[in-house]
Length: 392
Image 1 (cartoon, rainbow, N blue to C red):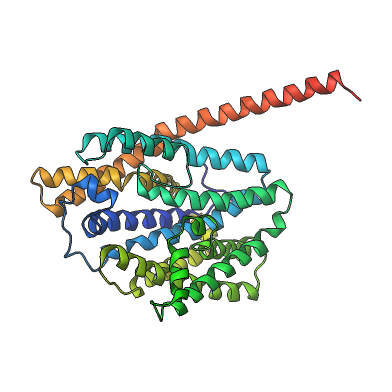
Image 2: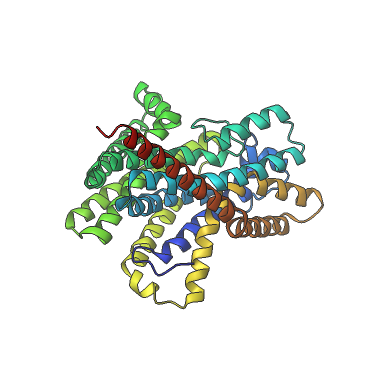
């Protein structure tokens, strides 16, 4: 496993793993009982009650915003020196095999629990998930973030296709600025929640199209792109201004997300805690990237552990909600105390994520790359034959 790559940042694997873990705690220890209409509540039968865990569990959703910033940084690193075709293959190989594996496991989990959902509906959700439909319902509601990520990837792909890599930073700053302005407008409109203006902003906040257009979360991807430009291209004082703007936009988005959680659960929580979580993660992000040369000098076993945690993160994110919820509900129904049931569920989901990242996912990725290589070779051979037949 190669870990000493010039632009590989081991500390981000740790941050990515942390983000996945706090999202998992949020879903299993809060969302499973606080939102009875949600998939995780259905999968767990709503039997786990963690109402005493209100210090941290309700705020773990901020891990998603951390993910988006990491993507803004890492994906641009991947795209910068890549062709459009290679970028497409790398993203396809990274995203698709894990979804095929984890969605299948989630389908099995649904079929094994008495959720009241019809098998035909479950299979339809499964097909939408493995086919990466941009709109739900999916086999697991956490798949909503995949469409947002793919839209960001699509923007990078277009810029690579037209050979305009140098446009990445200015375009993403524009995306981040639009997103920030939206959240400023939303915050101002929220002062009068009975107004038509707030109704319009609220409609956009709930809109899947606005998510896919990066209006809601573009500020986070832009934050990551500016960090990439500052650390891996050319440091500039202007970057600090952009980061300050996007930090404000990010906090306003988190505050707006807190209001959305209020609408879904009827419970009001201060946005201060998730803002602190996100801003602290951004400080950690800055520190590990700025000190990457030192981190790279850690013992090989430590770097390999960080890399494995990073590779586990994607399966962990895809598995923890429905599959983890099904495990949690089963353990509680078997009479295991809720705290122990949660610990057992988390342990099993982590172990399953490790196994997926170690065995079936790499094997399927290898087969996928081989398929693309064969298709490319066939396409090149066909073009060569056409050139021989028609040299003029």
